[in-house]
Amino acid sequence: MSQYSTKASYAAIFQDFDSPTTHRMTTPKSQVTPTASHQVSVLPDGLNFVTNGVASVLESGLLGGVELPSSCRNGTCRECMCRLVSGNVRYRIDWPGLSADEKAEGWFLPCVALAQSDLQIEQPFAQAR
View 1 (cartoon, rainbow, N blue to C red):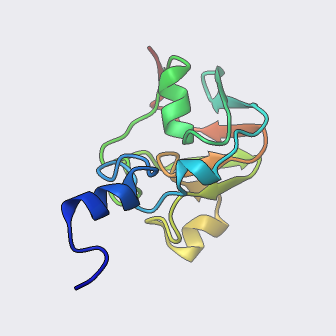
View 2 (tube, one colour):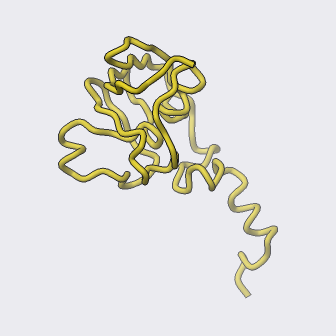
């Protein structure tokens, strides 16, 4: 019998993870340390918010009063797709729903992107909340 054969065992394995319905392939919370905060500037309207490199760019925007278009929040629907004008991000998942060409053109998915520096992004449908 496997050591993971009971509900209690499964619960113990996943207790440190973010909500599996939102992000299935995340780093366990116990392995994440908050990083310095980063400014995010949204063009063309000049909206701004702060992110900490632990919350996604999308989540940080919502917390900071900026709503970016979104739907699935797991990197598959592409509803939140924005252009990264400047800055660096890393992803919560190995290969977000973007082609290599789209990545090379500067497109990114803020729902699964974590800021690694100050960012300037382009999303004409962003709104202040």
